Image (cartoon, rainbow, N blue to C red; front, side, top):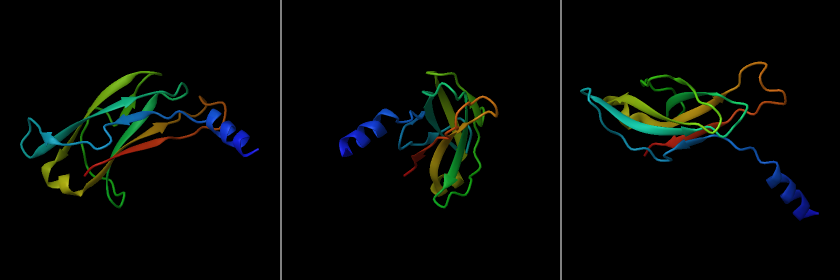
Length: 122
């Protein structure tokens, strides 16, 4: 019975999106006192097309950052590179860079599962 339950749980796993690298590293950018990193977002969810990007400190307070779009449109099985720019003075405060799936009202027929994936900044 126990193996049946484990097999059932594995068969019903939700496939979330991917957000890499797990431990991003920052480099200097073409703007003085600004550092940058490149993240890669892969959408493996058919019912989701939008993801929101966020940068947080270790206590989950938002940190100001710049990117082309904070909400990214990416089709099913699509990949998108995202450049994130942060002031050099904020670099020591950064704890996480996250992506969160955005569910559009009325597009998900079953109970929508929101996924959040964060990369840890060392």
